[in-house]
Image (cartoon, rainbow, N blue to C red):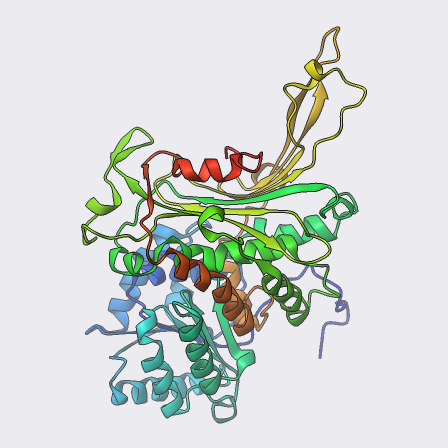
Length: 505
């Protein structure tokens, strides 16, 4: 019997999944240790996991359950967002299991199937299982074929739901993305496929929808009549770290622009959905992605860069070509800036400037809506020399929040107008800290909420934006910029030629 005091509209009680298992392929890797295991602990600490919840690790390691628990303990304690509680960990870790295995070994996957059958009875999970692919993309087909062979992906055979979580990159061009989509959708029901983009799990990204559609203040001016341009920036102060092999084969555009930044652009540009049903939200985002227009002259409307040795935050940084395992003649870009348009009535004529780069002066991801300047008819030109465009800036990370920049009179006897900023910060406005992105997304997978997960059509449409850029850049060399600079000089010139400038984040 349901709770007679609770209505469907009551959002105060937390969402808790049905009893289920989370199988992590590649559980010994960086993603699992740094993100997934801490996220699972934080969910348990917040009381958001069901009784009988179990984590099954699968990796090529000669381990038992105790070895897995030791690795998970160290990972969770180091990466947990919420306070550490030994009693919570003991309850959670008592449900950990490890299955050693190789992706090409039929017997190992048979053992995994047997383990899940045992858990169905012992833990009462009713066959409900989510499979998390924390593995290199090249291994996806191997694992998918094994799940298909054993029937592990079959909802009817399992007696519960079976879901799969796939990390980016989802393909490395349109053709490979289509092929992988077809393979995943042949093995799993398309509604059970969760393509994860961790940026969509960030509170500030979700707040774009609240900012636009819950307030009558912004939406009336969210169009080409009032907006001059939009800038989306993702800057990192770090280099490539240990990702040399992957990064040199992909570059900044495939690594970040194709997924994170185009998703941010879609959220900024989309029309209001009829509801927050996952299909309605994705339908509106897809319309924006289909309406994206590339520069008529890609050479003039985009810039690729590669960092040279320099200084970042007072420390010496090597150049990209000096990074470990990077070929001395690599032409892979570490910086991309491109001017995009959205061909619809709302955004006609408004440029969307999108940039991403490594070894920048500081780490920041933000979306800046720059409004058209007022004509200033009553003002003497000298009175508004210090006044720029009104701006609404959504800071995704760090210092999550929203800044509204507008003109105000400077105290004194003259009518001098200067820019000031009103700054809202999540950390100051709310007593509860924001959940980490993977915390939210793992919970959504277990609940079955696909709102924050791009579908196959979105992924493929994003590649239709990136592939022409990659083709145009194929025979070009990236522009150099020193580590610690905001990208190549050509990036500034691209905006200067249109009478604009990058906002200094």
